[in-house]
Image 1: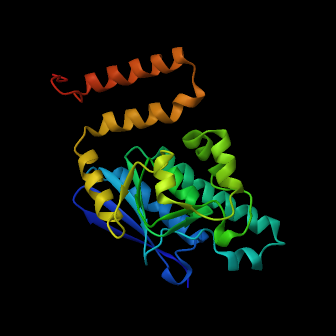
Image 2: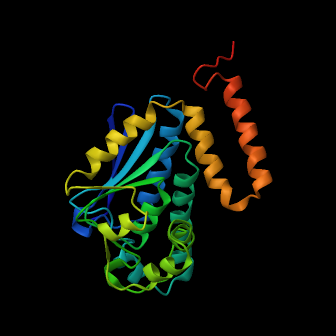
Length: 248
């Protein structure tokens, strides 16, 4: 059964749930397209201030649909098209101007781990597990995982994760700083929604500016980054988005 994408509003936070418990929420091209469409709608909705991404059935996501992979493993054109579609969703998550929080219960593996790392913040249940490989099947990374892991963990630990056969614990992930909050099992979604509600109270343009600046920082010189910070500061001041200041 194909995984579906379900949405539910909790105040100013949009909860997006990967729902395909029979396959531990394995990913498909249909999910990629739905994910991009959902983010586009959330971006244009001023009542949505944050997004939480999670999985149904006690797991985040087991990765790509291996049945589809095996069926098309010799069709490189079809495989390439699916990778491209997934990459577009990853790029949409990274460039989305509002906070995106991953709420991880159970397993996040392969492409599922790439989804987690594409989010801005991670709330992990103490029982969560993180693996670069779906069903411990060694594959090269996708969804920019080799990039996001290096940014989050550094080169050596990124290699360790990408070469590691067995999943890593939530405690290890939290110790390395790849999960910002560690919570009791079964509470990751609620904790992420509460965090999303807190972030949604901040001025939207300030939140967007900070995310854009942080995304661009690894590719900028210090001087270029300071120039960009100045530009964002002046724009937000002009819009009255800084406490104590008004555009009037």
